Image 1 (cartoon, rainbow, N blue to C red):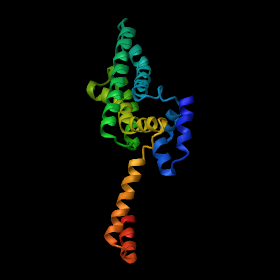
Image 2 (image 1 turned 135 degrees about the horizontal axis):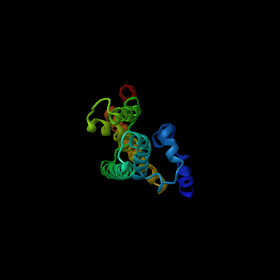
Image 3 (image 1 turned 90 degrees about the horizontal axis):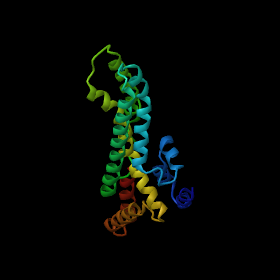
Image 4 (image 1 turned 90 degrees about the vertical axis):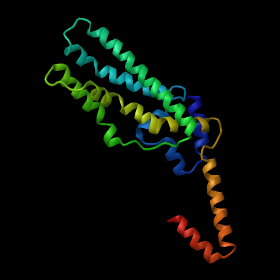
Length: 203
């Protein structure tokens, strides 16, 4: 827990908006309580794959009369976890290159998707309806890696920068100062014109 307390010490020097960007919502805040090595995006994505695999245990057991159902479940679970882990690693690579900041994922869409996919898989396994397997696996697997890509991987990169004593918002502050200086140059000492420019920027 030493690494967590170290970046939290740097966090105290940031403003409220910066802290909100770094900590995120309730789900991301839970992950920020973990050490950075444990909350690596690939680990978080693989953990989602593990949860999906555990949810698939009952459909595989009771929807398949073959005696090799457990072997199939272990094999497919390993593929799911490995795929999610690789997607998490790929997201971190993309974020490291693009330097993108966290984006709030569409929770109203992503959160129900695993449950819908699980329900469709159960229906398909029981033989009531024949449903496209691609749609089922998309609904099951997309939410976790998508959350990691949009929200957690960028946030983890910022936390690592803060861990190293680097202010991840420093470049933004510099650009803001440069914009302010540009407004002052446009006004050229005219206080009334400067106030109008600042008002337009605030809007």
